[in-house]
Length: 138
Image (cartoon, rainbow, N blue to C red; front, side, top):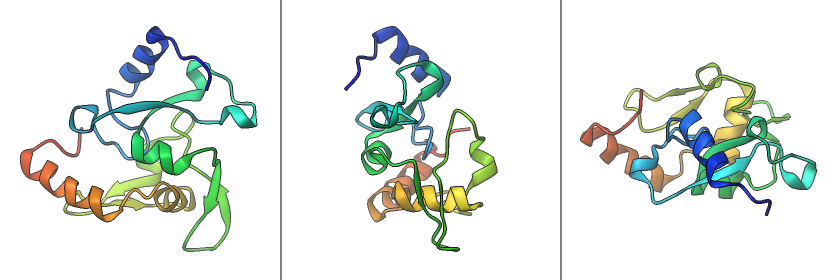
């Protein structure tokens, strides 16, 4: 794993406002966040700010080295959401109760599916976070 300096990590966390750039979970309510290479090192991705994002352990562990996934609606392979090049709100929205992430586009749907953004445990946790006023972060 390439070395990421404390200063680079701080810059990534600051830019992300302490939130997972995939599922928007706040650092304050999860155990740890990781710095993810949007384009994986295994595929030539560099350890530079333009290729790094903040990710919760779950999203990062589900993404691994993937750069694409199948859109469950169309069955076509599409690129995963790229937080360095795309806007979160163009591809995702929250369910009315703010506990599930809705993919608005093929990219959004494939990313929600691949990163398991609505697995049962996180949806249950979001219910508690919404009640406590911690979620979603604005």
